[in-house]
Image 1 (cartoon, rainbow, N blue to C red):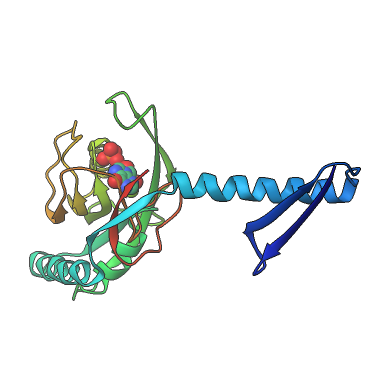
Image 2: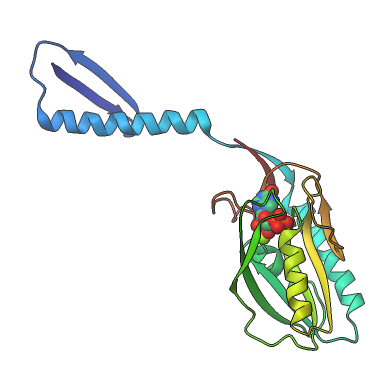
Length: 221
Ligand code: IMP
Ligand code: MG
């Protein structure tokens, strides 16, 4: 069996195969063909299962709301020393934009936690991955989060900073996703309420992808 194939426009997905039975298959040709078949397989698998994204919040809508949140925070912390703590990784873009709209002499820091045991159940466990580099004892802490879903992470974080002796702990979340809330959380500064769905972009990820998108989208697989 002899196989002839060629690429059109140098794109692996468009390969024309012609089979000519009756000749011996050459090893190198077979190996190339096998690689091309694998590529075609992945291409069609991706095409068939590629996640669809639908815009929910445009870049401009986000920027406008972030400015409003910054103004509210500026007004509320006029006479207080404020430490703004971003929750990694999801809040990194929101944190960068929000802090630049706060017209006060603030300090900034980050914390990272992991949750295990499934976020859909209240049995999920939070583990501290990295702590802020400064002491927050007697400081006014504003926690900045990308999205509050079940509320488990934020409940743990608020308790953590309270245990560390913070003078006050308030919560700012870009998105309040109420659909799966299991732990009651008072969100002092909430950007948007979105009841359901899986969101990506503007720091929010799916499998570490899409964080760099400027807008926020619903992702459906
Ligand atoms: P919670 O502990 O269930 O409130 O989960 C909060 C964390 O889950 C967020 O900080 C996100 O990292 C992640 N998360 C929850 N919902 C979404 C979503 O729709 N898109 C991306 N990440 C999400
Ligand atoms: Mg997060």
